[in-house]
Image 1: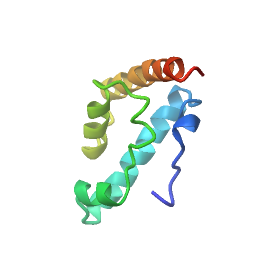
Image 2: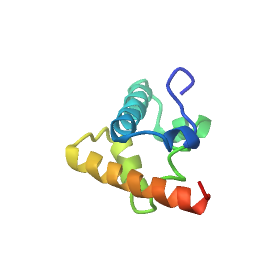
Image 3: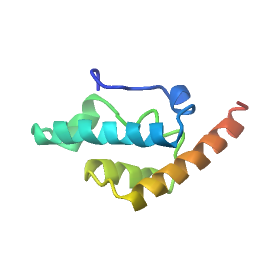
Image 4: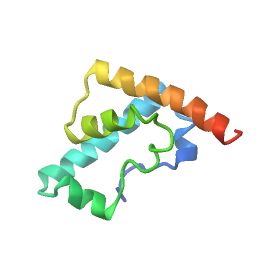
Length: 100
């Protein structure tokens, strides 16, 4: 994602809900371009991990939903609400665990 917005976990911690959704959509669009260009998800993940900065923040039960939504380009309100709620909880848990 060298030409795309790739924030660190610390930067993502500061996102509001809309910024989080925009970031998710940005990753989805990027992945779709790569997949439509002929790469497989395995080939993409072999060279980069677009989910790396989010992994420490999302609860274990939400993370696979996010990955599947991104790969399958799912942008429904229901999925985005689940991801946003998970993100909000994850930020709180991350900050508690890291004394921030």
